[in-house]
Image (tube, rainbow, N blue to C red; front, side, top):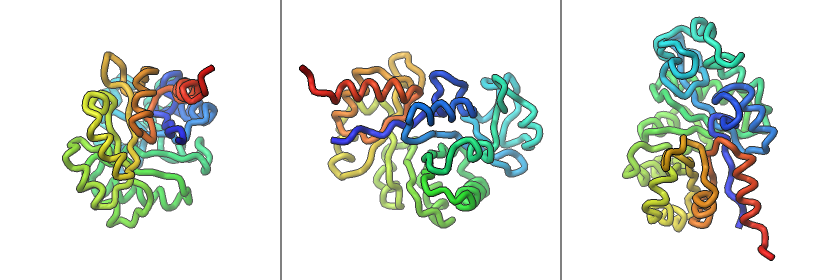
Length: 245
């Protein structure tokens, strides 16, 4: 059985500020299969990389990204890097061969259209869109996106509709996946890729891992993990796969 993909959650965010060039570079150095980046749209329709809706946590500013012009957003920095780097900086930092996962935080039609346009213009073949609603998936497919789409669904009862509309991968959270593994088992039995965001439970941040849980979810059939420390997770899974003396 092949090892699951290790997706660097907001970059290698265990060691570096999330969604920053240093985190992307560290994820590449760690051999992450994919780099996840959260994408939003500024008030004047520019795509930037930031998880939160505002800059309060990252840069101590109350500016709401969707309500703030791009130039104003770029005046804010955190740890010697833009608080909300532009999409162009992500593409300039990450080599074309390196797969990227977009966690699309803004699924308004204009934001999706702008992101699809940028993705297609980039010429990159290893981009995956992560969407939170089936409605967003319908819009994305209507815009001509034919690549992979990860379901970051808020309501897991929409999973069947997500796949029926052309979704290709499903994301589950570690806590629910371990508390009731039947859902994971059902999707695995249907030969659907399932990725797990580790953490978010047992006092761990989203993306933080526990060795035992990582191994257990791998045995249950998870095909990918969104993690803050891809190098450490690889070491865990590699040790677990080695024959015991």
